[in-house]
Length: 122
Image (tube, rainbow, N blue to C red; front, side, top):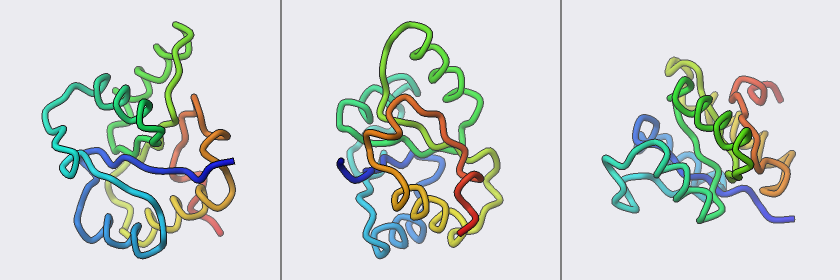
């Protein structure tokens, strides 16, 4: 059982958030760090899956569609965490991802579309 590793979309990669995730011990890379700005959502999800990383994004609409398309076409992804609104504080987002990572392995979240709000409570 391996630990969940995250790939943070450009819409969510605020420095304070990424620093907080790393300080909590989570394995995180951002779109900016791997120089993948401007790639399509589908390409971003494919890259994340090839790297065994769960995609973290505020882009609920597009990634819900990509998830549905992958599942209906028999394709696979490493998991997608969506945040339906950008109003969550850094601490709330951190708590949600820590709760997720502490409860599940990377294998558990393969092909899952996960709403951050499910993991905000302790």
